[in-house]
Amino acid sequence: MRFLRRQSGKEVDAATSNGSAETDAGRAGGKGRPTPKRRDAEGRRRGPMPPPPRTQRESIKLAKQNRVSRAERRKAALERRGKMLAGDEKSLPPRDRGPVKAFIRDSVDSRRHLTGLFMPLAGLVLLALLVPQMYRNLINLFCMAMLISMAMEGVLIGRQIANRTRKRFPNETIKGFSVGWYAFTRALRLRRLRIPKPRVSYGDKI
Image: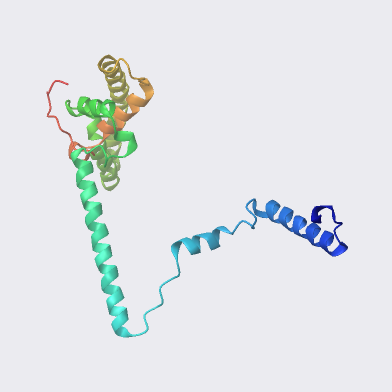
C-alpha cells in the first residue's frame, strides 16, 4: 500500500521546505503573509489619487466642485453652531452635556454676578496704559480690588451651586471642585457670549 511506501529524498526535502516556509510566513504575519505597512494599507483603503486636470476646462470644473463642497461644509458648521447655541444635547461638547450641567448653567444664568464684569475689566486694564501715571495707579488699584472680589465671589458661587446640585441630584456623583469651576467659568463670560445661550431670565427660580 502507498502509505507504507518510503518517501524519496526529493519528497522529504520538498515537505521540509514547505513546512519551513509556512512557519516563516506564520511568524512574519500571523496569517500566512507579512503585515502590510500602514502607508500601503491606507493607500489601498482610500483608493488611487484622482488624476490632475489636464485642461483649463477641467480645472474650472474641479474648482467649482471644491467651492460647492466648501460651501456645504460651512453650511453644516453653521447648522451645528446654531444647534449648539440652542442647547441641543447632540451638538454640545461632552463637558456641557447632561441634566447636571444644564442645571448648573441655569443656576448661574438666573443671577447677576460681579464675575461677569471680567472682560470689561480687562479692557479697562488695557485702557489704563494710555492715561497718565497718576490715573493709571488709581485704575490699577481699582482693578486689583475687583479681581480679589471676583475671586471671592467665584469661590462662593462654586460652593452654593455645588450644594444645590447635590440636593437636586442625590443619586449623582457630584464633585465640588468640578462643579464650582464649571460654574465659575460660565459666570466669567458676558451673558450674550455664553454657549449655549441662557434659557432663563434674571430672577427665575431654579
